Image 1 (cartoon, rainbow, N blue to C red):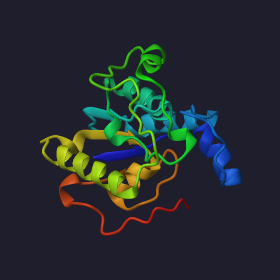
Image 2: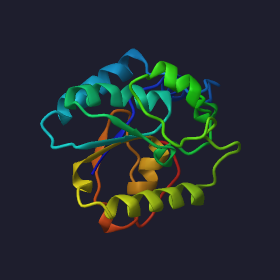
Image 3: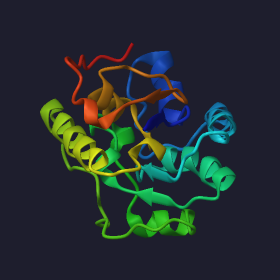
Length: 185
């Protein structure tokens, strides 16, 4: 299974420069973020991807869209692979808004407000990652899955801190990482 961190968002651009939360709810991709998404689509074109699982945050949906177009696949949207709720950027957009912005996406069974109301403890993110890992491991074709997600979720899945637009392969049957250090580099 391939985990792809979304491209650079407006939040990432400002946070990396200041190390302060710029207060941007559900930020969009920057021009660089769109380029990273296009590069990911190009890199994944030769892979045998049959399923794309994506977080409902705008930045993840924008990153997944060119991959889905290139591969002719629909997106499977699920809050399970969302970011750890810790900054203003982790306030999402209501499903009714996302349906208007992303009319080609289905949002089945997702609550109108799908993000937590308060900061999400690390152990809850690890539990979400464990649940997703088990769900994927139960599928015969997990190796043909792309997951477009976020720094915190990918960290919980792999123990690795990845950059915007970076991909990492993971075997969900191999179990959880030995340790997870919750620090942006």
